[in-house]
Length: 431
Ligand code: NAP
Ligand code: HSE
Image (cartoon, rainbow, N blue to C red; front, side, top):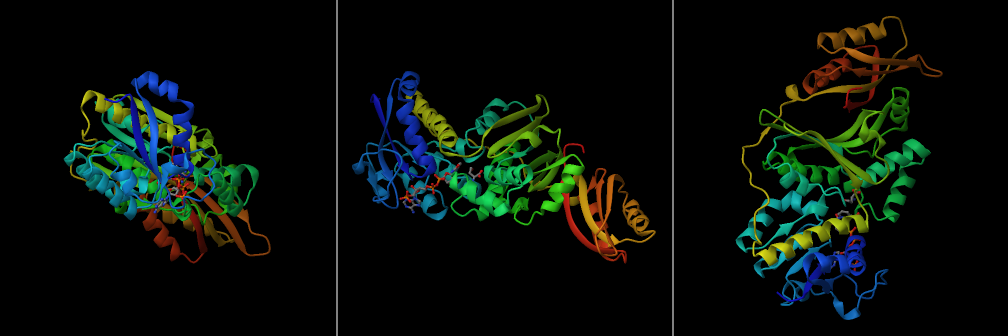
């Protein structure tokens, strides 16, 4: 094997620039580990004329994908251009040309992971995507290798840096949603179209990848219940403070008796819960497995250098496989048939905010309705609303099923004293 290994990049934005910076800054360490230096031979971009913060030889840039994909000097391609259809086409062509691929593209892996893994395997190529979930946190390899002998039961965490940044700034600095989002975009955490971040889609795609690796079954995006943070009200964040609860966008994946539940939704956690202290763009993921118990993975969930660190760990893995002659092993081995958890088996506490008539017996009738569904209250707050005959009522229920809770919500609609159901959220972590 040659002493210099050439790699190609598809994309030179936030993450691609981070990859080049790491290769430049840590070349000695890489060479020491591998006995080979790494050189970036060719980089696909959209616009060659664009001014770039990273230094790169002008003749290394190209707008022709073939200069990377069908380049005889390149064995390993790093896909950091993002998007779905074009990136998928490039990858399939690259496998056909016997190139190994490392990607940070969770959108593509969540939607087309199994197809791409098959194409990689058929061509004797590696496909790695450590950077696709949790930015710089070494997470996927920990799940698929570190916990390989265990049975993972639950994965719960903060897997989107942008929304965690926004929630932190709204909650702690009183910043508006719009200003916090604009800052996250400037800092390079947000996706090109930040709708995917704030509507929970980015986190849902990551949870698909985590659930597949954890439960060894082919979870798909349609299996995930998704709700984002774009219509969160500061009123609920303030009630959360009064109740010692912190709002986080939580990805949740659970397997029980072969039933799988995956969701992404704004969720209240006790302020003492370790995930509550995960701030700004940081991510953290709790993994609960039968033998090992709880483990937690924490670190920078987005940003150029952290994400590039995960990419380079995959690049090194590909090169090591090449040195050992074992490229092309399959990462996912679906081993059981997927069965989705029905609502009667989805158990949690709930936070509920209502506007009710401020009159004698109003709360008693609400309480009676919940009792009928077997739901009891753990916390209750009632505040008269200024200049009106309404009161704002906030309750936190004890544990119940999603089925019971949604049935109770339907019945509330018919209750004369209830003027509006303003919001409700899952509460996890034992309020
Ligand atoms: P970005 O800053 O928008 O960079 C995208 C790069 O790809 C740019 O260099 C762009 O070229 C190039 N590109 C895009 N479409 C292209 C096309 N059709 N043809 C040729 N070149 C094209 O994106 P990023 O933040 O680096 O993210 C890249 C990937 O990493 C995405 O899949 C993202 O989801 C994932 N990711 C990002 C982060 C993060 O913190 N940013 C973390 C984890 C994973 P020009 O420079 O010429 O415009
Ligand atoms: N937009 C993503 C986030 C980038 O904010 O988490 C990292 O995947």
